[in-house]
Image (cartoon, rainbow, N blue to C red; front, side, top):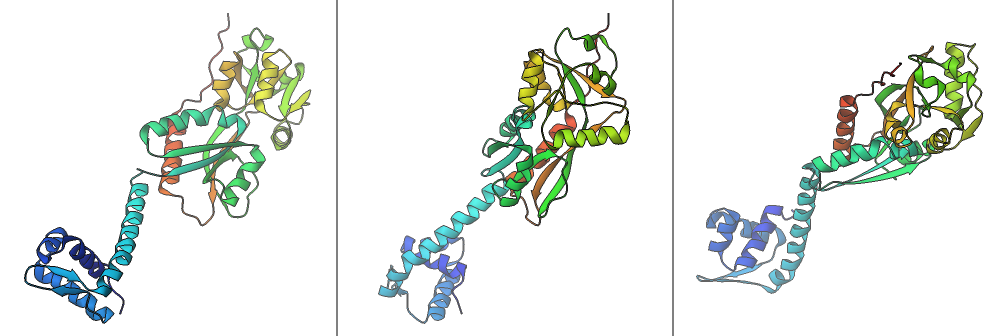
Amino acid sequence: MNPTLRQMRAFIFLARAGSFTLAAEYMHVTQAALSGLIKELEQTLGVRLVDRSTRKIALTDIGRELYPLFSKMIDDLDGALHDVANHTKLKKGMVRIAAPQLMACTLLPEVIAAYREAYPDIQVKLVDCAVENVNARVASGEVDIGIGPERDPAAQIDAKVLFEMPFVLVFPQAHPLEQRERVTWQDLADYPLISLQGQFTERLLSDMHSSLRDVPLNPANEVTFMTTALAMVAAGLGVTVCLPYAEPLVKLHKLHMRQLHEPELTRRFFVYTRENRSPSPAAESFIAFLLRFVEAHDWNMPTPNVG
């Protein structure tokens, strides 16, 4: 038989207290129960650990040898259990999040600030990266959560819908489109379009052609990051298309947004996690917080003032 945790705890309390009376008080048991646990431990090990007298106890040579070993084992276990309790109670932990650059500089800082206010003991690490690298970082275990647009299903990745938003047109102040109550995809043909490279434009063109083949959508310039596109729009070099969550950066550049119609195209974003891996309590709480935050946010487009 192996010693039980209760037997080892009884031995440690007795060694530290130096008497059965005090040790029994510390363990909240009777002296008889404590004595029984010590006897069981000695019988299990086949050696005497404690020399007893009417006034005090003394550890045997074997008892003195085992005491630091048992003490460290119990302290390590108690520390681990306390650590687990802190994680469960969100008193400790870290959440690592991968997100595309645009989301990392618009929506997520606001969410993280609100989350940290609610859970100040949880660390949140944000990794901004190319949109095509989000799932790879999740799959490798580099991050706990990935947030990004819809992509083809990937092995070992679970996806949960975060939101679905309409595409919006972004243009500078005093632009001819500013006075229009309704802006359509057809209107883009009259102005230089600054778009993103890669799957963003490819998927957008595919959606456009499947919905309305007559709409020409030929980007005049393709850049890597939406931040670049918005800066170019602010400089008067054209217009661009993005999603409403970019509103903080759009406002920073003093630009205007209008939802695009005919057709009304949308894009879905997902929360990505590793398949068959339970998120940590901290990661699980952040996901739930993010979903509530997005649900409570008003993504309605402003109505233009037409004089």
